[in-house]
Length: 226
Image 1 (spheres, rainbow, N blue to C red):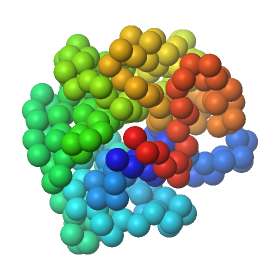
Image 2: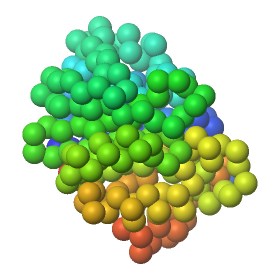
Image 3: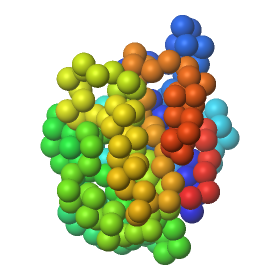
Image 4: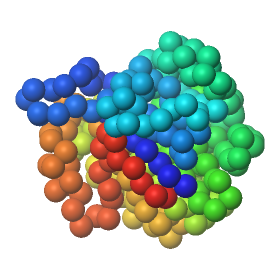
């Protein structure tokens, strides 16, 4: 299974940040060239920038419908090219093309119905968990039942902010570190994505912050073999 990060930013990114000297697009990812996770407004820009072919996308999974994760125009364009949106409700499992998908309820109260996904191609298993504070008990049970999970992508919106009310529906880096430690018996590798522009510094600073934790800092255009 191949995972390509088309965007790794939270909703407060709005293009290139001259103070930081780089850009994160809104969070989205592509599995194996045929399954898109979150059809946000930056998807086609990312595809052009990183020479990612989206012509093979046949199915789309949406974590939730906040505007940085779901753009109707992007979905319409994908649909005209032959893709369809797959609906897997929280707590349910279904076949989505060649994938076994379980949707798990996310702790993201400003968007009821938000979900994270366990995705298996029969060989490797991915947990994609952006937007949501900590993990629900149902999610932990799902991850444990699916073990070994080869890669878990966790929300890292808040950086090291300790006094931001968004902590009740987004993770800080200490929370991510605690989650990774608790889930390490069931998950082989961890990555963090969905970083807020105003709560993080440069990507190099994020990598330095995570040094020694075993958690990978994702960036736009990163391609991983899960």
